[in-house]
Image (cartoon, rainbow, N blue to C red; front, side, top):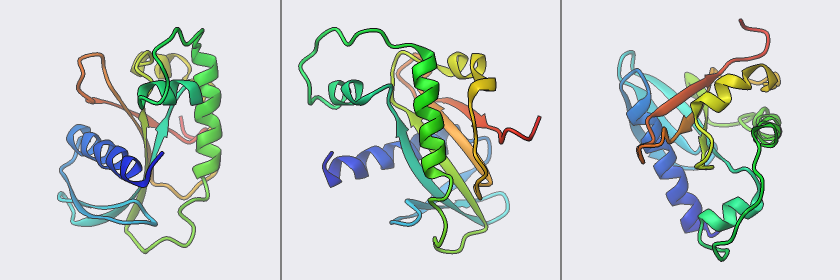
Length: 161
C-alpha cells in the first residue's frame, strides 16, 4: 500500500466516523502518533484517534484495492474475521504509548470487508477479545449495505458488561 493510499484510507475512515458519531466532532489535524486529532465540540476536549482497517484477509484487501484480478475469493466466514479483529486489537493495544497528550484516545477500525455488517459483530460480540489498553473508546465503522458508512459499533472491554 502506498503512503498516499494509506493517507486517503485514513482520511475516509475518520470522515465516516465523524459523520456517524453521536456527538459533534471536528477534525483539527491529520498527523502521526496519533493519526488524527479531533475536537469534541460538546465539551472542547481533544481526542487522539488511531485508525485501522479490518480486512478478512490479505487477498480480500488486494482485491478491494484493485491489486488482484477479480476472481472468486473463496469462503469468508465470520469466525475468521473475528480472529483477525482480535489480532488487530491486540496489536493496537499499546500503540498509543508515548503519543502526544490528548484528553481522550479513540481507536477507530473501519471494517473494509463488504460482506460483514454490524449484525455480524453483534452476533459474535462474546468472541471479541479486547486486551487491556489505554483507549477511552474503541469503535468499528461499517458500511450498512447502502453504500454509506453510517454503521457504528462500540467495542467494550471484556470486563465491562
